[in-house]
Length: 136
Image 1 (spheres, rainbow, N blue to C red):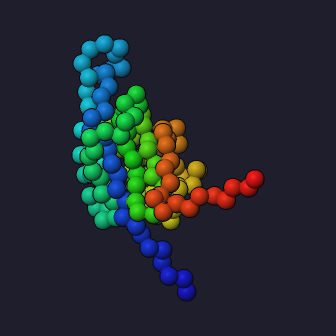
Image 2 (cartoon, rainbow, N blue to C red):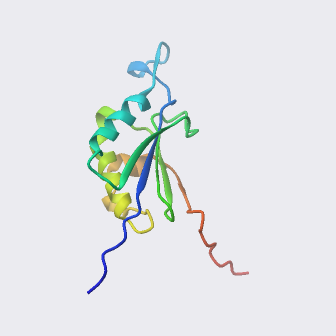
């Protein structure tokens, strides 16, 4: 009998300093969509003991608000932009749960919600990453 896979707790970091123009206007007031998203996502994932949602000051993806990062020890980190609490909440919950279950953090392509597939800004290797062998 195979032992069950060990679940590594996931942190979903939400940029709370991302700013966007309200209503898609080119001028006028800004809003900060991450401030709403961090709370809404935390509320939805409150029952998931293996997922923590935390606000961060900046993920430096200012042109693609709102931005989140999925991270866990020993796993690849994903940074995803162009998100909205009103539109992408269910997709983010699905992605957070999928990321938590993925041994290396890589959610199979077809299992990633479309906004996650389209919004990936970066995939960063884990700190203990071993470089690929280079051939001359």
